[in-house]
Amino acid sequence: MKGSLIIVCFFVLGILVSYYDLEPIDFTTYNLSFVALCMLMFSVGISVGGDTKTLASFKNLDPRLMLLPLMTIVGTLLGCFAISFLLEDRSIAECLAVGSGFGYYSLSSIIITEYKGAELGTIALLSNVIREVLALLCTPFLVIYFGKLAPISIGGATTMDTTLPIISRFSGKEYIVLAIFHGCVVDFSVPFLVTLFCSI
Image (cartoon, rainbow, N blue to C red; front, side):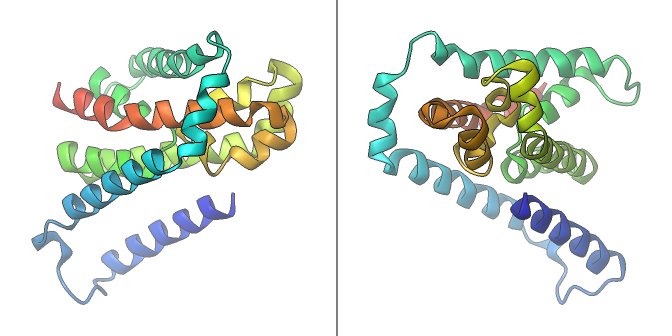
């Protein structure tokens, strides 16, 4: 949760710096968001491909549990589709693009900003940070009322890193490999789904 709060603080700081025109150079004249996006994609590839122990441990997973990332993706998109009818100023595709971040706020918000502008990118950032914070805060209650798989699904792409410790604590250490697998698969889907829905 500390990491999420730091991200939010830097986000607010960025707004204040821009609002009061305190930045030393005009960042809008440079294509920095595209450079940051490329660096993020490269980092994701290294983190997924470089951990051979994690990749090897996936072989021991129950095949039925391998459907959990798919259910997380489908459930999130169905929820976004349903809520889009309540948001008159946002299209279905835009709502699906925001939901397709699955908690991966840094990558999804940059892609959405590139395609749809800063306003929707900001909404995506806040939406995905809130998803992560809710996973961190609500995991104990989710385990009690909805079962040990619920925090993994709620965590989305974050279950391979930031929410993994709390999932391990409350769902049990036997769910660590599943949480990492879930996070990797959902994480991998983010750039494809966000780009797809932004292109519609």
